[in-house]
Amino acid sequence: MSGDTSQDSNRHSRARVACTAVRTVPGPSDHVVVVGAGLAGLATTLHLLGAGRRVTLLEREAHPGGRAGRLDTAGYRIDTGPTVLTMPDLLAEALGAVGETPADRLDLVRLDPAYRARFADGSVIDVHTDAEAMEAEVRAKAGPAEADGYRRLRAWLTRLYHAEMGRFIGGNFDSPLDLIGSADAIRDLARLAALRGFGRLGTQVGRFLHDDRLQRIFSFQSLYAGVSPQRALAAYAVISYMDTIAGVYFPRGGMRALPQALADAAAAAGAEVRYGTTVTGTERDAGRVTAVHTGCDERIAADAVVATPDLPVTYELLGRAPHRPLPLRWSPSAVVLHAGVRPGDTGGWPELAHHTISFGTAWEQTFDEIIRTGRLMSDPSLLVTRPTATDPSLAPAGRELLFVLAPCPNLDTAPLRWDAVGAAYRDEIVRVLERRGLDGLGDAIEVEHLVTPADWAAQGLAAGTPFSAAHTFAQTGPFRPGNLVRGLSNVVLAGCGTTPGVGLPTVLLSGKLAAQRITAAGARRSGAAQVTRTGQLPHIAAVTR
Image (cartoon, rainbow, N blue to C red):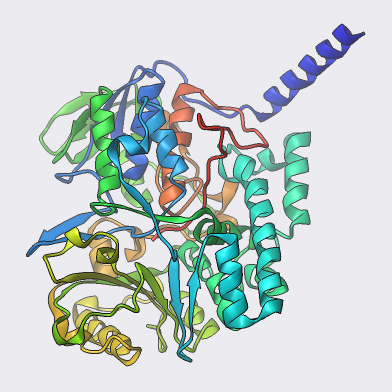
């Protein structure tokens, strides 16, 4: 009888496999050309190398990183891209594909507090990822009822994360029907619904927390997905899980250390990594890309291609774009001021943590301005990053390095003339920070670099935004632009424009999913997250910065 049961179990298992198999690249895939050495391309390369493929990685810049760029000037080592690192397990997974660990190449520091939130009324709340420390902070700043609400919110965020990770974030999709294509899929969908994942983020956070300041801390992250907390699906609370529970890290040497570590590991594992090489076109035959062409008039033959540039650039290189009933909606953009400062008589600003969020009085109005009406924030909320708080070597002795991010409309929503507006808005940002306690900031700046939506557009980023396509319901999960290209059987996409979405962790995961399309490894989605070599669940959430 036990034998019959085993046979029945095997038949059921095979049935589940058949229902959940996803498309992979047919034909030979011995040599893969990866276009772009950003984090998505680097993760793809490592996972492909681990599966025994030969990889040629082509990057137009002189160094790896893509949007995680770098600028060195006057002794300041400036990171021009993401500043927030979470879910280092995904780094471990990519490096583990070639037998390495993050500790082999990186010195990661866990930040405490992960953030410091400063409010217009002068109050300050430090965001700790340790449950006891954060509960104590909430109790001290908002009272025992809110502390109890925080504990319940933390439990909900954790359950939500585990409900989403395996199927909805960590797997490839071929069709929206994949969501209901098996009993397991229907079960996972019902579990997410029972957790109110399809409600509104702001409303769900409000079930646990009534203090307006705490509501902001646990919902502002939806901005990076391109949606306000009032309109975002509660499922995007996984971003809050990432920031406030899983932990925020910083690599000594700056964020540039991440792509450099991945690139060095890829080269050590046998990848041909070529910098200063711009891909200008592709050669196609019988529904396959057979070669890529570079700006040096070179033809590089390929069995398969992984393309990681922003979607419009990729589609132009491939000579085809998918048909969508509605055009893509792009996320808001950002103005970023990189400032090297000599504190001098000000004595510096010790009230700044590594990451400090300076909230204005306005909240819903702010999202309305930058997402809907296309206006600059009338009462700005700003992210101020001070990497020298953790690694003083990023600036000359006695200096500080600041990164100030001001969300703003993208160029589709507000086609502003940033060549005229940029300098004035920079001055306004500095004045706002001075009014909020950073006395003497303007006079202390000795080196600066301003980035506006016009600069993002010049880099080839659609609508002048580094945050790519917004995570509206119609652009999420199986509705997001897919990582396969109809009509080209051996091309796979990776990066924040495709699945699973925007943010440093999800970009790393997109590389893994792209590699799986080629190697067929993990081609079947599971309702549970895979386990890493350490036996821990890999973490994932969509932010970045």
